[in-house]
Amino acid sequence: MRIHHLNCGCMCPVGGALFDGFSKGLTASLVCHCLLIETDNHGLVLVDTGFGTSDVLHPHRRLSRFFTVFNNIQFEERYTALAQVRQLGFAAEDVRHIVLTHLDFDHAGGLSDFPQAVVHVMQREIDAARSAGGFIGSKRYRGQQWAHGVNWQFYQAAGQPWHGFDAVRDLIGLPPEILLIPLAGHTQGHAGIAIDTGDSWLLHAGDAYFYRGEIGQRERSCTPGLRFYQTMMEADRRQRLENQRRLRDLSVDHRGEVRIFCSHDAVELDQLRAGAASGQG
Image (cartoon, rainbow, N blue to C red; front, side):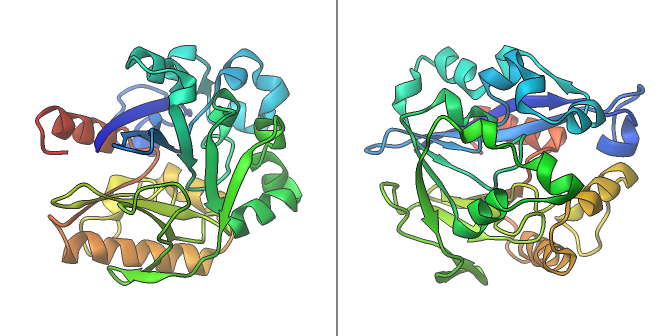
């Protein structure tokens, strides 16, 4: 398998380093870290989609004004997964599968760009999206992003163990090297995506954490802006903090065996791209 690290969305909330830990100006730089996996016999697989073409062209029809303003989303077509798939020399129909960490607006916007793909997600997540209410719930899930009709495959949060986590294996139509790891908390059906690269594992942890300092060491470190955002968005605080602690332990106890990254940290994305370019990622 060959893995491409894509940035499928740029968000620049006011707060600068109070969010991302490095920006010098008024605004921060947050990414939407997605993966494009070239498999031998299963076509292309996308892990999350970021914002899609329709989000860019018609943001106020597709997204809530609250999150558009709060996150200061930069609507540029070059960030879409579709544009980047084409830039790599592929066509939309080459993407045969999409595996989602969850269905938030900044993770599922590109579904409509790949209408022929099978979309894999936790059953509990689609249930939460379909019954969402309240201020945050009604704005985080945007049914417009999958109203075109999706070929869904849903999974229960159970399976064989993987480094102490339950793992959903045997994803329909996907190679056995790709696993769903239930990581509820940020949303009710949130999951990580683990990929066996041959000599180690990559774990896309989605929004189970937001800042690089929350893993890789025993004590959590996070910017105030992202602490606030995680609290605002959490569906289950106990599960979120517990799963984040377990990821932190995994990142320390199995350093070198498992490389963990989240969806929105620009530094992690740059590091993984650099590692891939040098043959280490």
